[in-house]
Image 1 (tube, rainbow, N blue to C red):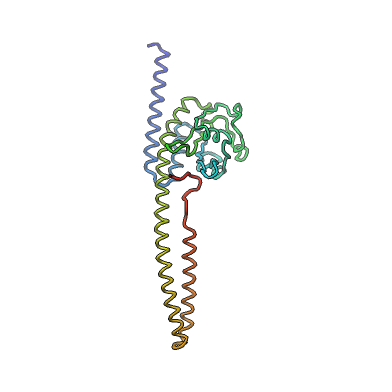
Image 2: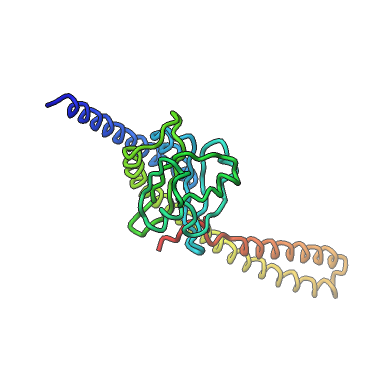
Length: 261
């Protein structure tokens, strides 16, 4: 085997070891998390660390509008990004979400798909980036963007391949966490709904009883009328609180994440 080929083989082997190590770290950390937002944060953190990125963001598809929502972000202007929205197809992230194709941009200034709007709004300067879809059997649920290598070099094709591999596994874990999150919300909704019905029925029964006592007290025990009226007022306050809690029950744990069915 000649020297150049041996060097290439060693480089490929080292890259594969890095990839396996990154996957192991992602799987270990993400599988230990149960809260959806924590899973998203950890996923982005591990990807950024593995690819030595200066900044990064994880965007999810809002199924109702088709927009991409910055769910979590890392880097010097992360606080300015969370919650921002991109129109369908806008920028590199929008292109990747629509096409489902990963993208390496060594120099964003030379790519017409880079809108620069987020940079202008946040004050961050993007030089090079990687963007991969988060795709499950149900389709694309979001994208991951990593910006600027910390060593100042452009991202490479090997970097993109590594991010693709991590994103594939991370998407499955995120989808699983999202299902669990919805199940927890549904369980809370069900318990609160049942409690509300039972509590409302109890209040109605108590109110009927107090009104009956009020009628009797008006004729036979007038000194109790004021006390019973105060009790009825307090009971009405409880009824209003019960109705307010029922109206406030969440219908969806996170509108920016697509439903599970």
